[in-house]
Image 1 (cartoon, rainbow, N blue to C red):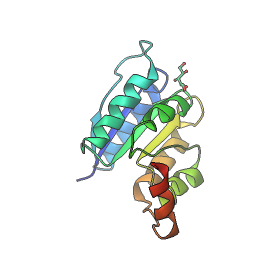
Image 2: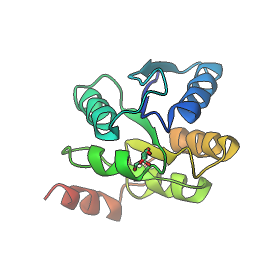
Image 3: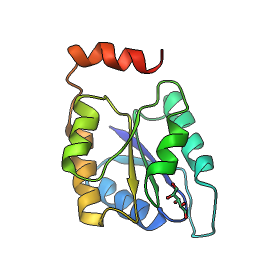
Length: 143
Ligand code: RB5
């Protein structure tokens, strides 16, 4: 069974909860790395923990949520092998997988409404990397 690892800061918590419920409805195992309450935290802490979990092989795909999706993606992308993409709609979420082979979907709880976020999640999970010419481009990311 697929496992998806999720994490957020305080701003992303409401959307993280919605993502968690939807993943469970789809029969997907969820590993929730926090946060669990709205106490203010520093988003890099959750992003680094999640990136480390992916690089440790706990899951192949992660979802990170903060206010904008930007801070968590910047932090996660500092880890070699991590490709975190901030997505705002179905098109960006699809292309993040198809062309960028993104392994983390980053979203902003203050930017996307829950229905859009879940639509992004669904396409992110089902879209395969196209490979081909994109493979050499992915390889250059960690150059
Ligand atoms: C928290 O207020 C906010 O700055 C954070 O969630 C995120 O949007 C940073 O990129």
